[in-house]
Amino acid sequence: MSDFETSEEFIKSLLRKFALLNAISHGGKPDKGAVIGRILAERADLRNQSKKISLFAAEVVGEISLIPLNQQKETLEKESPDFLAQELDRRREISRRDAERGTTLPPLPGAIQGKVVTRFPPEPNGFMHIGHAKAAILGSSYARKYDGKFLMRFDDTNPAAEKKEFYTAFLEAFSWLKIKPDLVRNASDDMEKFYALAEKMIRESTAFICTCPQELMREMRGKGEPCLHRLHTVDQNLELWSKMQRGEIEKNEATLRFVGDMKSLNTTMRDPVLFRIVDQAHPIQGSKYRIWPTYDFDGAVEDSLDGVTHAMRSKEYELRDELYHAVLKALKMREPEIVEFSRLALQNTTVSKRNLKKLILEGKVEGWDDPRLPTIAGLRRRGFVPEAIQEFILSMGLSKVESLPTWDLLESFNRKILDPMAKRYFFVADPVQMFVQGAPILDLRLRYHPEEKYGERVVRTNGDFLLPESDVKSMNVGTIIRLIEAYNVRILEKREGKILASYIGNEKLEVAQKVQWVSQSEKTALRVKIPGPLLLGEEFNPGSMKIVSGFAESAVREIPLGDIVQFVRFGFCRMDEVGTAILAHK
Ligand SMILES: [Zn+2]
Image (cartoon, rainbow, N blue to C red; front, side):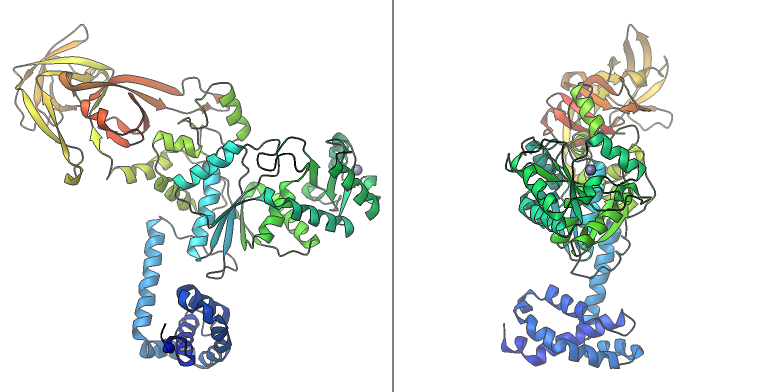
């Protein structure tokens, strides 16, 4: 760094440029904090000069505020023409990227460029699904939009439901979705902090130990009547709390409850439980702790401790927002802004963890990655690409309207991405044999895609073909059909499930029905799983997974497992295992 770059003169000129720029977009009054933030964000090399920058900022911002609004832009154009041009390019690039993502996210209330912190707090008690993906993608996109930070925090404070494999599954889904958190951490690492805060609440009488049986507690909360335990002294509460810690009180025999408002119309506020005893071992912490916070407590506290500025929650938590703020107020902790969005699921399937677990347990689906499921693992296995899921979710943005989109909508995003890049192959389902009299032996050079760069393969035909039964049905004797990419034939005979035809050249005929084929001499057996609606109404649909058998051209054997291709006139399929593909969609 040259001496000039750290000189007072240089720093002031830099401040002046950014302050003018900021003033222009803020009605003539530059925001000092934003100007400093922007400089430090853009110029990592000047971060060790931040003191100097702050020192001069007030003076420079003051000078700029004195320039009338209509002259500020002129001044900037005159003083730093390149800078203004670059800035306009930068903004165009940002909006181009926004447009590329199919949406422009609406601004977050009170968001400051470079200062936004968002998070995604899943509980590792199942696999990540499309509803989680919405929360994660919105959180990470907003952090990107504001050059802020995005955290992933496992909300793992219920050992009864959580498992190691689910942490891993979430991380895998994240990396596949190309979501990159700035930090991944676990709420369970903060147990000591939670206990300290719980004790603080006890000492300040904002929480009390209740030893009501569960049933009674539920009943009283329903009626809006406080229980006697609210009258415990601080000492009595502390004594009970340590008995809970020491294991002298059984599970369900004591909880730490918030001093809320038993008369509140929002039942969430009626002295809710903040800590309870869970005796199962925790997947990470083992048996070190037995009193665990509820999400109402640790969710709020962790957001505050993590520096989260905008806590995005789906609308189902609406009633709990009041409690979120009340807990932080009681603890005199910083309160993040809650931003709501609507829950996302897909039609004819389920995101309910309870239902998913049941379907898996009963063997009705193949596992968490069953292609009928809206889990990320299921969508991936079916042949959806991460970009399609991203665009699908961002297209809905922050809309609060409850949405239950059809699979078609997600499919349309996927198709738009796959169509220009998926290689095309021939596959024939439920094959019927056709022999063509007088057919030449040909080595057809077929492109994998209309775009030349995807290359070609050679397919030998000798007049012995397989055609899809669905096409054969509509063929009558005398019909002329075109074998796609090959030639025309006339049907001579249909008998015993076989067809006899004659070769009639390869001119393009308007009338010809186009038919997919596979050459008998170069075929490979393939089954395709066709996932359909998992549920009909609330009920499991026993016909939700169809399997068709057929033959594909032999080049299909070379497709790496996991790749997604298009079977012409059949659909986009992902190669799932040797000899088996899954239909993503038409
Ligand atoms: Zn009680």
